[in-house]
Length: 180
Image 1 (cartoon, rainbow, N blue to C red):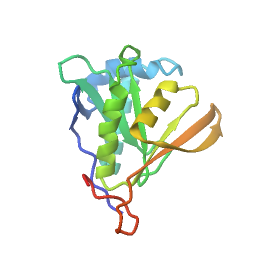
Image 2: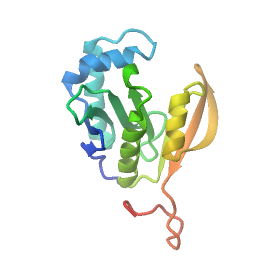
Image 3: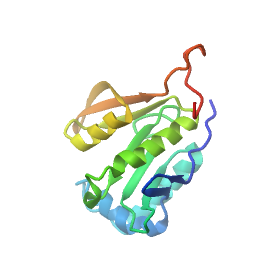
Image 4: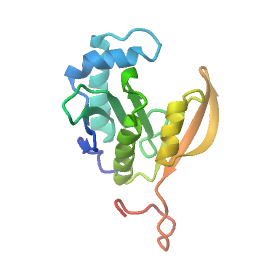
């Protein structure tokens, strides 16, 4: 099935979400380093940005930076990526700089990206979250994800959540039309 590409610009109350740019490498390196898996350099962040651009061109989905509409510096990203999913059923991902936590930014941006992902024609979007990540679990709940199953990998348990477009009554149980 062919899907329309994810928009390259989404606007929420507080953010304009746009693709990563090479100029984002500095703060993205800091964000990637906060994951606790070693320091990420600006050069490595630029390489990751280039890879994301290639994946976006190939699959029509990718990461969008949360750029505050008031002109402040970027605070994170929200994305729809293949990740642990597939092109047909991708994964929602979001990540914020530590100083941006606790303000509802992830929920606001992830909702916009999730809605845009469904508008591409995708009926099912996944999210995978570690059980210890209470903040991300709350975001998934607010967005209407439902717990589907748990898998265990080298880092421990991983909870899989699913968000499906509601079926339209009388239309064979398929996904609702975008905006409908």
